[in-house]
Length: 334
Length: 259
Ligand SMILES: Nc1ncnc2c1ncn2[C@@H]1O[C@H](COP(=O)(O)OP(=O)(O)OP(=O)(O)O)[C@@H](O)[C@H]1O
Ligand SMILES: [Mg+2]
Image (cartoon, rainbow over all chains, first blue to last red; front, side, top):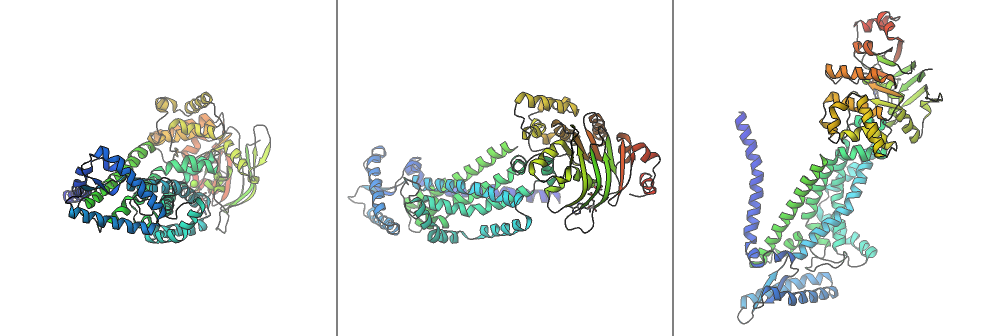
């Protein structure tokens, strides 16, 4: 009986690894053509879906292609964002037709992932920088400062906030938040900043609720011991409650990071969805999940493979961020 | 002149109709050990926790009467009058507390002992190191931990953790130490070490100790207060309480007829 139970537990546990490895292999094999074609240059190349003459070797091709992207970005600044989306689609149609003809036209389409990679990392960073201090403040307030009844009411509100589907955050962000951000910081309504801040609002309730819960596990007698030594409330929070609930707080950050890195719907509404490297924080750009969601339907061949390459990179980024957070900070916490 | 003089003291928890302590009159004598004994729920902890106003971390308690604290410089103040945070801090630096379960902070052994000093404003590194060493030696812990002061305090045994908590309280040089059943979570050997330590501390501080263990009270205390259902039944020298109690209830309790 015990043997069977052990085997069951073991196989359930190994299922996790099988899944992880399976997903990795699927992504890798689908991304293989793009990896073979573009190699690691994919990560540093800002051009997505650009035609370049075939004869020119990749090193000299850099000059014309950057020119083209500059041109593209200046076009973008004239055009409104919605038009830009259409433009991209038109481009793709053209490419496909050209690929089909491919008699005297000696061009090929290249894909680079820099823009969505940067977009993903920056929106996540903005979200975290914005949400972390506020979430900690809310958690401290709920766990230590507010009277019980207020703490309960606000706590329920926070949990409700955490349950709102992301598409609602996206719509709210676009119609209500984006104009405010544009007024305050200038620039476009849809931008890295808007997407990052709304993402921050989305992950905030998670972090606040989990942090509050782990702060509440600090034993009363431990806090009393510190007060009994003459500690102030601030010192008890800083020296006892935070260190005691460190593991829970880091856990909440990891969960929030995972959510922010992979968030698609809300970001799709707010980031602008154009393959242009942002010069300022208020510029529109695109993130990996949004690039995949927007382009998967029409993609084929190398384009589709490039999207898988992006997916693989997102997988690796998430994995790396979470393992670093886990091993580095949790080790330090001990 | 007792260091603490509790006069006509009553205490009521929030949301409770009847006071948990009724009209308590009790002196805590200087450089002596006063034991509080009595059956479970009689109010020993409640009384002890009034002496450093740790109750006030939670709102809504009601105090009546006086707890007069006579400082080393002979100035007298009523602990129950305290309202401001800095006065609470001052009070708790003078009146330390050790709890039933050891409560090491989530930091190193050194930082644990230095904590009270640091928040009291001691910054000088050598002074901190010296006072930590003195406190650890005074708590009979130095030999066991001097080579791992930077290790987490969580790695110590229960008895060592409790002695660490005593060292932590002693380091800030309090005038009074309040112990709430400090050995009830420990094995007999650790208990013996803590008892020895408490007796040793008597020359520097005045001590009030709550205990369920009557042998412990008779072994280490100079005075004993017997409490029952929120009343102080009898207070006297320990030998009188245990050898010829004046009250019938006290006699019944110490002879094990109830409780
Ligand atoms: N936070 C509280 N709120 C309301 N009543 C309380 C609270 N804490 C204790 N009491 C009540 O006050 C009375 C005295 O409790 P206290 O903890 O002081 O007893 P004790 O003598 O220390 O008992 P023990 O030996 O079990 O520790 C008990 O009747 C208890 O139920
Ligand atoms: Mg008690």
